[in-house]
Amino acid sequence: MMTISIPAVHSIINERISKRALDPDRPVTPETLLSLIEAARWAPSCNNEQPWRFIFWDKNKDQSNWHKAFSCLAEGNQIWVQHAPVLAVSLAYQLNKKGLPNYWAQYDTGAAALNLCLQATALEMIAHQMGGFDPKQLMEAFSLPETITPMSMIAIGYPGDTQRLPEKLQIREMAQRERRPVNELFFESSWNHPIKN
Image 1 (cartoon, rainbow, N blue to C red):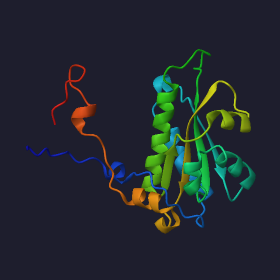
Image 2: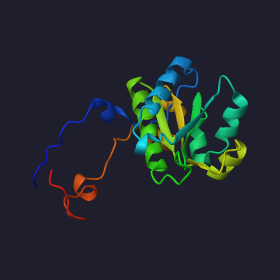
Image 3: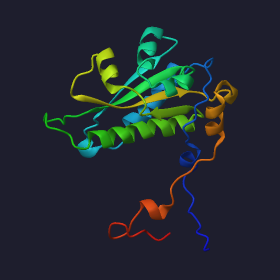
């Protein structure tokens, strides 16, 4: 079998990982949160529409709304997110500056969320995005307008003790990152014609 050498990517990409073990006793300072926000703010977007919106809930500042957001999470996420000092949601504003549907709003919002996650990695933090939540419940709980689509909830904090997690999650936490092979996902010139690497 031929061995394929994979080119190096930037260390920030290699180091970004969606960990679950969070330190409940280490708060996220306002300055640090602003750093994550600034990273998201500078994401690229179609026609510079910047359709992303984020809501942040700091457990130390506003436990009531943090718990209201927390209650929108799937039970499997609540098990570990209970230790997150900050919760966030990324939201896509679905109209462009002309008031017409913005086809790329969700795509661009994902780019902003990734910028936030990479900045968190650079600061040796965890920013774990989750699709396991109830968007309708979140919309109602925070009176969000119909022009907004919740995309992901994000648990934000610092690495904590893996032993706090249930055994099943400890195993997942320690598992090596995996990705599908290049030839399953990337094509050259036509559909299903794997790119050579």
